[in-house]
Image (cartoon, rainbow, N blue to C red; front, side):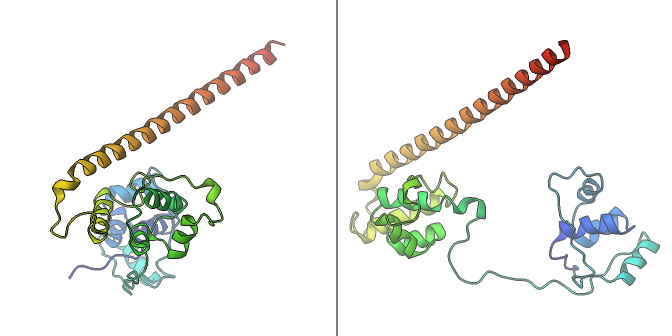
Length: 236
């Protein structure tokens, strides 16, 4: 039976690299990583920097086991206590912290473009509450002045497939299409919607690229001015 890996394998490997004399092979095997990943951590070349996690304090290893490994490079570390698997409880859709500030914009876009979608469906799609949706709808939201309707797919809050499914289900329930699902009637609208979304995404991408170019140009100009000022100072 395959031995379980630590709860946080990369962080654990980082700690073992910094605090023990175990070989890269032993650390990689214990943590379920490739030896090159461990090598990169040791050489400080890993793309991500991990805060070390002490497996001894976590109960996954003990010092006696580490000492066995340090004395014998061919020894395979044995986990003392397997990590407890934690599963998410049933609740609203999880949204990464970096994207949570975009939720109101996505909700506003759906309310404007698809009023047939129910609050429950919006909550499930975006991962929000009915109170937030109601506040945006009646413009009582605390940040309503800064909320700009934006496509939730473009914002990364949901996939195009999920949005299309919700739109179709809501349209069918609202009687916008017959119960048999006459997709032909919505064919032109669907194509138009897809084209609109693509154009909106292209515009966002272009704007982001232009902003990056402007920032780069400004940084270059500032560096040039600094260098020229330094040269003038030396000449004086």
